[in-house]
Image (cartoon, rainbow, N blue to C red):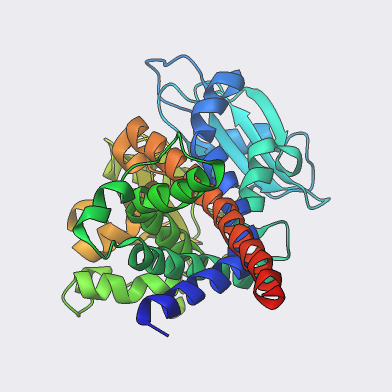
Length: 378
């Protein structure tokens, strides 16, 4: 067998093995790309009128959000400020195990809406996209292996697409819409697959980095010249958390005030749970609301509220900045609304490739079966 025939066989059988998972992950990814834009249009509680006064402290938001959920500790919740014209949220798990997100007016602390995320459309879409509604431990391997196969398939597909002769190149870039439907289907698979390959690789690899964060480590090292940048090494240790001084106010308020002071130009602030007493309390600030690239990171003492560690975007290494960019790359928003459109279209094409590829394989298989009886009769 020639090299190209071997690649063709590999492309075929890998595609048949992973096609269904790739289709589901790609189609749900296409739906999820515009989730913030659609929710802003359909969920009025996500927006508020900007005011000249400062937002209320997180302890007040937690008290208002948990008033209907007695028994849930405020220290176990996540609080997010999304910017001047957006509501704040408090996320927690209630006594029944349901993930609850409460939207509040950040200037008054008034509850605007409460969501049970188990029944929320985009949460379900995200869960299908990431886990196929399977147990997480199983889904990590099913989805991860299938997307890894898809990466190999895009590379082998480029090998198969490459024309042998110069005169064939033009037809590899265009779809012959006036041909028979089988030819149109072949062109849809071949031509669209070529155009989508580069962006599809970015989407697939960035998704794999979310499933397996350890895959990012060699990439970060490579970008940083093979050596970890000293400022990127976390120095916080459990033995540094010994402290007799107890904070005189809610730890969440201390964390929020410090982060707001150190990152005054950042719109979005995310405060993690503060209730363990053993591990540091973490906080992340983001320059733009709903964008996760340019961020500063803080670690605080879980008892005294003293700032233990900070990492600012401006001082991060090139490799770490690339890692921070991963989510925004995955959904296309690193390039704004136009980037989302590109990610949406490429996701649709990636979803179509297993379908058109299966039709190509089925047509060739039937064609071979039809030829065999004729040869035997002769």
